[in-house]
Length: 116
Image (cartoon, rainbow, N blue to C red; front, side, top):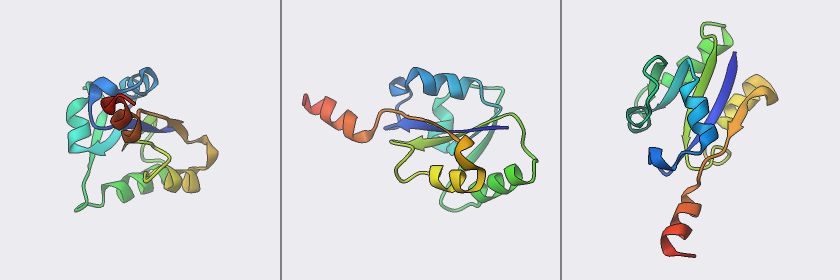
């Protein structure tokens, strides 16, 4: 099993890094919001939709702990995957083997749009 937290950037699939696209395209399982899942193109991956009103994240983590899910698992994270994301939780449960794939942060996009 390979677990990655992929920076999805500011919510625009055209702003994904090449590493993010490769991780998403090679994933067997993708966990993200409905908006994120709608923007990606990996029709073969099993998808789990996160929302504030469901326990999907907890169910996926328990499934990973129990060995229910195998292969490459990608958790999509808006903005920087190291800030306000599931990365610390996953690293706490699965150790340093969790791969972090950075994306374009909201701050970078804001500065670019302002021409700074």
